[in-house]
Length: 293
Image 1 (cartoon, rainbow, N blue to C red):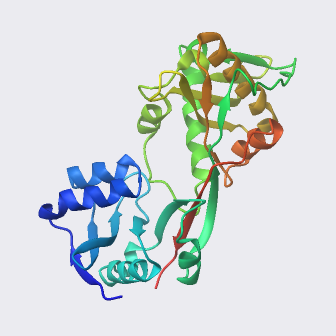
Image 2 (image 1 turned 90 degrees about the horizontal axis):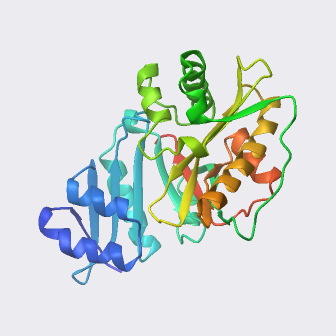
């Protein structure tokens, strides 16, 4: 099949949006197109119709790689698009990184083109009315909702520092930007945080944070989302499932039906929850990375 390659122009917007929508892709890509938050977009045409696209962008949160997404009807189109993108990159733009769902047709393509799998992310949706689990909270620890912990400045600062450390240690393959604790405080307490449904485990003297698990609002009115979870050390990770169970109980008590979560295989804390509570391991998304040319 013969392809014609071109850089995206604003005049291509409607046709590209129709192409993306037909493939049922997520709204983030459409948002990037509309607000030009990308570095490169290349299109391949066949017989006057878009057959594939590749979009690349940078992230201030993870500045050390170039993110991209590729959509194509045929592997040959994807190969041409990736080659065109890499032709415009320099060594400092690597690694390249993309996330695809488990049913994506391009898995073999990425592996054949020197990408490696760096992470799998399990995305279960828990029906709290049907799938509720029980897990006893250890009696020698103190568990409090986040809104009762935050007023204590020492504990609040300790929590932010722990969130920062946990996130950094679970993202070593794609390091996070160097940021002050004030920035991490904003990340720890976003606007959609449900502080009364987020829980922190303290030691018996209530001086040290052992574990935490956050809960957030979701776009759907009948759903909430599990956020970051972590612990002071690996043994304390065993506490986190009990915090998640309290979150399931909270969701059910408030009137939500579903709780969604993201569980990365690079996080020992997330894996502790997934395995201990026997949560579904589907759907799953897969992160691919290419280190360089």
